[in-house]
Length: 495
Image (cartoon, rainbow, N blue to C red; front, side, top):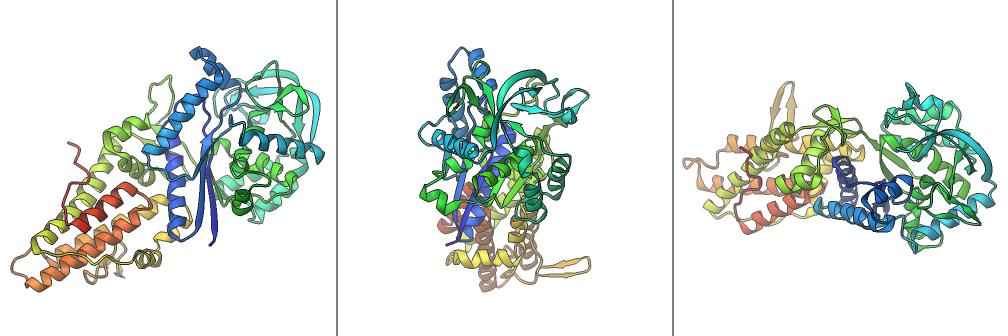
């Protein structure tokens, strides 16, 4: 059986999760579910990044120690994953001294043994928001381009990693497609960064400035830099270096990350892996940000959207649907309650919910039941009709559009035809078939009415099977209603 390893980035545990975290979890979940549906052996990893100065400060501000603070935040992320129906196989924490710390220390020692770590006095610009040293080229009007704050001038003795040593190899692997970065624009962004020249990067901070982290092996005056620690999560969760899971699942098939951390995943992480002599991830899929009513999410603006509140009010699958359908997969997208409720009513309540109730009411009335089609055959139907092509390219919105709009059996110019009720695919096709065949009309021959209703049930089942990849709870409810011939409202309309 073919393996497939997918990971999210691990959210930084200095604050509660927001809607942007939900987006990444849901995107990765759809990819994982899709590859399981293809019969692959999937390992889906997420977790939390729990070391660093920002976390120590956030804990101090709350009057608690960092471990208790991160325990609370990490548990909250775990709960968010649960309420969103995320199908992850593991959850790694960087404070895990039994699983994560040994791998980080082993990586450090191997980087050192390979001559890729050295200690020197350094003076530079440090962005506390990025938890990283940045260069003058990365500033915009003297501020961090991401966090819009002036960096701190720092002078200290640190351990450095020879990132510059691997510049040409990383470029070659990206240009050759061995390390695929999606979308193309983000690939060009990393190549541009490499072409400017990669500088060696600080891999430690003095213990006097950073105590909340993993000590540098053999140097009790230093603590491992948070990114050198966090990036290792992708292999520590697999039991690097001798674990059976590592042998089975590495390299990662897909890392799902936000655009703000691409440079770490597109340069530093590949360089570390090259130094260690292990394979690079195959694909880095990069998503954008979510804005709220056109503005960047900010605590000071008071526009942070709590995903728990959204789920409580509208349901997990409604939130999943909006994130997948309305937010462009690789670009920034906007959230507003008006957009959310418009999409909810139009697609979920009016279209999907009404079509299900309409067909089930007829099936109950006419005593029509369904011999359940084989799931593999149903999935093959969708594979033939381009739905899987969209998912291979991380085009979640397009995949749902195909599912909702329907894929016509015949197209002649501007004319779209759904030839018969047995072959239509998608909700629009189902609606067209119902209107064309009119199984609700008592003047139609009874045998035909029953056959058409049966065909419409088959189509609903097909749709429900495809929906398992996107809206798992809804898919299960539809299948249960069809099997039990029990008509219930899926999504109550929002007034």
